[in-house]
Figure 1 (cartoon, rainbow, N blue to C red):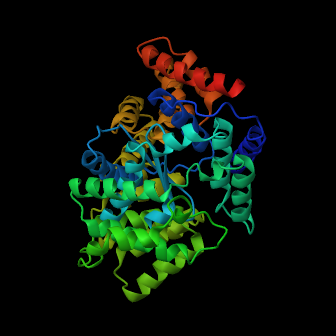
Figure 2: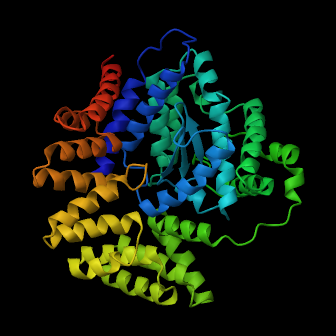
Figure 3: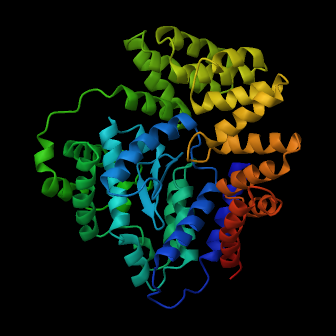
Length: 458
């Protein structure tokens, strides 16, 4: 289903890119930037590329909160997302949206390096680099931006020619000059390096983390296919920048081991990485150390992705035996029990964990076991325990509350779910049904979505 939506989306955008551009130099006001970013994000969400695992996104949020503080920004002023994509890349678009590919995450060594990439991207936004290029471009339209997005999404999603296809779509769709819309100049990069380094230090990390991150991206990029868009595509001159700006950091001692980041990296690799590559990595680690519970857990998640539920259950149980009380493992075992239609067993695992994945699992098991009162409270908790929307929780909670007659809440949650997945028409439908306590919030969302639909009709 996601693949079909992606192909339809790409065809529409490729046609849209042929529309004539407006006059040069349209001013990018903060509101226009916000609207453009929201439209971009909804289009991206519609492809299913955004990672919604609450354990991954929860860890990412702890890092981005420090990044925002280091940049002197308020919580929520910028939004950060993991993209389930191969290729080494991270990029920012107007309106405060920053994205990083999952392969980038599992190529880095520690949290500081991840923070360094995010600080660099935040600096591009605070310096208004993208907005300035958009204002000065004679062909920078919403349609051409969408065509660029299509190219980014096609490249690296599988198949022998997808990288070349993506590059061709970016070149053909954007027209002359639009290829540079996301490609920062050397001056922009130098400014983002300096500002980003300052943000990184204020966030409590070390300059060596930025040097280490860029060094890894530079080395690994040259190992990839030349057709694959990478960090160097949009962040040029990395070699000379390393020599000019980070010579002091290059001499710094390496960072100590970072267990929290390593667990996050393992989960990202197991949940989003290439199956065969991840299998080799985790198997090699397990051969070297049979007590590597992270490798056992990773192999369990890979077995689950292959629908080998019995094997997945066995492997993650072994991981839990080596790391008793590991809440991520407990929640994953609960999910496996639910997939095997064992809600009572799942409940036992979920009740020992206290993360968002476990709370949603408890809501589902309570519903299946007939305890609607507890299910209602837990669905609300799963939806609201974090400021970031958790799309699976919104969908399940919305349908549950509709079934028990709490229609306003059900429609409101489903409106948020469909908006979060880029399905604008369905989101509008559900928001229009809201008439009770959630109506003011629904009306605000309807206004935003109506503007997006208006732009689409132009």
